[in-house]
Amino acid sequence: MVLGLGGKSLETYLTTPIKSEDIAGLRVGDVVYLSGRVYTARDMAHIRIGEYLREGKQLVEDFKGAAIFHAGPVVRKRNEEWEIIVIGPTTSMRMEPFSEILLGKLGVKAIIGKGGMGESTQKALKKYCGVYLLSPPGCAVIQAKSIQRVLTVHWLDLGVPESIWVLEVNDWGPLVVAMDSHGGSLFKEVKENALKRINRITGKEEAIL
Amino acid sequence: MKVVDGKTLSEIAFELIRRSCIGIAPDAMELLKNAYERERNVAAKSMLKTMIRNAELATVENKPVCQSPGYPVVYVMLGGDMKLKVGVQNAFQKALIKATKVGYLRPSMVHPLTRKNPGDNSGIGVPDVEIEYVPEKDYAEFIISFKGCGAELANVLKILTPEQVGKNGGGIKRLVLESVVNAGGIPCPPVAIGIGIGGQMHYAAKLSRKAISVRKWTDSNPNQELATLETELLKSINSLGIGPAGIGGDITALAVKVECVATHTAICPVAINFHCWTARRSGARLYSDKSVEYLF
Image 1 (cartoon, each protein chain N blue to C red):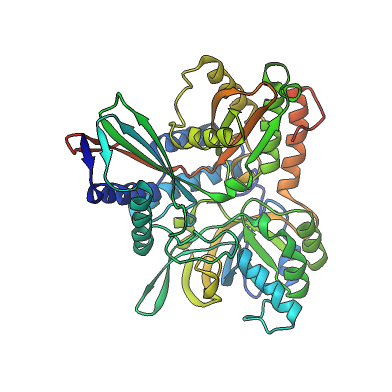
Image 2 (cartoon, rainbow over the protein chains, first blue to last red):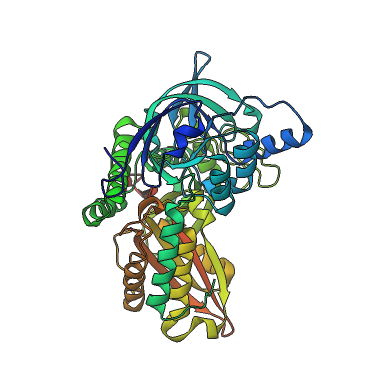
């Protein structure tokens, strides 16, 4: 299955740790399949990463070249081994305040989630050569099939959804390049066009919201 | 008077939760398949195909359709002859804890301030319960609806002035369209949108949630004026081009449901409630002869 725009998109296979040169060629609408290590992180893990950096504490992993997945899985423990039942993306926008830290300070290269991110992420992706990948929202059964195993879990005291789950993935995709390292954003284009259409439909320009 | 005992309610509660999690409601699936046929954007069409396949696989494999169980609300309609022996909230919370242990639900309920997660979806006030007493019915009806919280982040509640309402509710239509654009891909489109109009803040908000939780997404509003508004809004929303997952496309919304009550002459509260495409809801009726009918 190809999830490209009008069939013109490119398919790229990436393996972690990801390098800048892997990212530079990617453009909005391209499709990516990812292999290697993926770290889940939601609100509380991001907040704690921020606190650790401020306090000069050692982080639990080296995130250079890492792929961060905005997600919290449904898990089960069997014979002391964690098993992912299902996993899918959460709303990325909540993690917007942390993009500069993740991409700039930690060297994260790919952020995977749903719903898109904002201006500060767009700038950080350009400045540090990173990419935002869209994973199909609500499709947790299908995506769990690309997870090979749970390598480890950090900060379980934050609760199952908010911990950092270190996952081994194989050809995980299709993930759509929704924001690239050249300032391109699928969501920005869609929003700008939609706003023009609202004015046409309502015959007004002033916002009510 | 027929008494609904604790054991019967516990069994119904668990079965409703299980059914809700492992797929999407049949009416939502029908609209999703219809959306797939109509969508012209290649990437958007492919996204819809993945969604349909994922929902079907969830049912076949007996797994949660989405990793996030969202937030549960239980709607109870109590017939005149029926009496509950146990608290609905208590029975459903116990069933939620059981369903979490089995792996149908991720433990997602936390304390709102400390963010502490007890790990089993227990918590103060979970689930939210609304009970309506309907004397002429001879059954008790229970509907549970899990609504995802990315969608919740996109919700809008505004108390409009009469001037802002405008001619023929033009201001309300504008508010809805702006909310949809601001939301973009955040509420996991294609969405269903519940709109509560009137009352005060809490009343409009309750109606907006109920509209997309209890009504079938394929139904028509019995009030002709509101039915027209729903059709108009759906058409306008789907001309905005936001598309499935917010990546651009023809289908941004599957359904719009409007509920309206009288309000005070000074105000017009409007609550806009987004529901992601994963319509996790199920319902059951318990009759006075103790037979149980699962509705969807």
